[in-house]
Image (cartoon, rainbow, N blue to C red; front, side):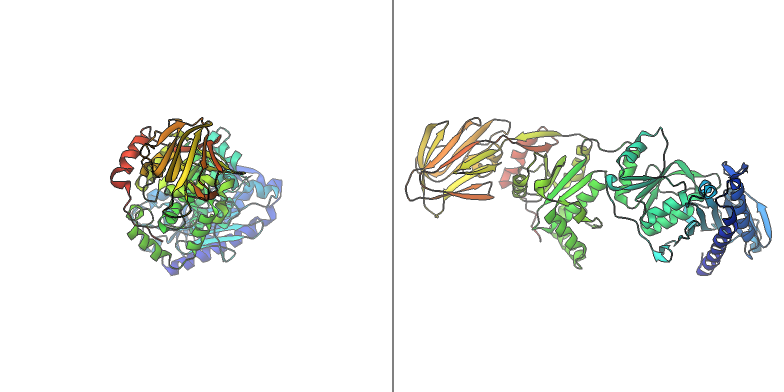
Length: 617
């Protein structure tokens, strides 16, 4: 339709809405208005008030100076205009080639003259009219995609919705947009379900609120304007009911599809119906579709996400993963620092340039962040690492990020690491395998690996370490004199630059570089490794992790610094003891391959195992 035709169609729609509202007013709230008259063309019962409303629509279009097609609830399909009225079958009519040029209709009107009839009869304030206008295609049937104008009026309160394809949607002349709710547990859901539909029951049971107002037309519009977060009709909605509200919802930015998430492009016909699933955004919509089709992940319900904050590649990639998880029906909580970084990037005018530069410097994620949309309210998902209580925590970074994160965790949440650093021995996968692996995990195709930790005691202080504890002098090029006991027995006394007490997890880190053995993490052991000892016979040795190790400085005037996992530091003086024993708490990792450890050793420790991809911020 050109602008002139749109103006003509809009004026006709306004007139229909105004006159129908005036015509039915005397009948609202009167039981006799609900008197059964007949079965309508769409196969549903027709009441007296429905006939009153539809007759006014027919009268207006019949006496218009232009021809139009009408699809209406009670009477079916007509060709109207210039005082004429003719019953037709629209799908056949549109294929005709013998209609004179001066009698060719300009528009297809799809009208539900009174949606929420029972509400109107009983005086319940939730009833209105829907008018959609589609262009008339040449030589083919018309579909929902041909609808270009949509108008809905709530007769009970005067609210007026309208939309123009490609231009937006309005409520009472103000632009509307849906809510930003992304979790099922927070949503307000409207609609019609079937009592035997188990999957729909899951939605209803988990939704924050459920509404059933008895008007598909109005309730779909409520998703567009933010009064609802989602709406579904599992009985099947008639095309005439949803044609205007579908356009209004899509123009507001919402999503509406069939049960399987497929685009609605049904034929415009009185007989056409479809199951409707509508939501405020793609994330919530995908969760609903997954549940309705029994595709939801039952094993992983909530995922926490932590990222390196000194690299754009990790921050931007985390946004992509957040969206992926939300779309797949998983609730997400993210570390506060990451939430703040993402919110800053949302308003950064240089964001397009940042993305382009990151794509150049980190080609592994270039495709993933090509059309990145930071359209989530990240602050709503933010939380402290110490408060996390999720089913899994995803860490984007290297081993350092992982070690820092687990040190702050109070609960034993399984860790899944995505290597964004250099070696990344503790992380599970590289970037290229992210989504393939996450899909497996969400389906429950994974196992949990347990790793032991050290508890370090010094004076009245207690620390933990997943990898190792390093003891060294606070003065460069100075040696320390150590005495090492295991279960109260002195096993060695020596001078050295330092000493490492390592778990099996740390055996591939500093311990290995200092000449210690690589230990399979399934072994219950600790390693004691002297660093550059000044005694030929002193070598690393392995002890049971059920033992208690005690290290004491035995040279007066020498002070030592000891560091846990490269993160936490303390000092020890002459004759002070540092004690080590196995922690009662473990660290758990999510793994997807039983061949994890030795495969990692081969991959990561060949040629230094260095990831040559440059860093960027």
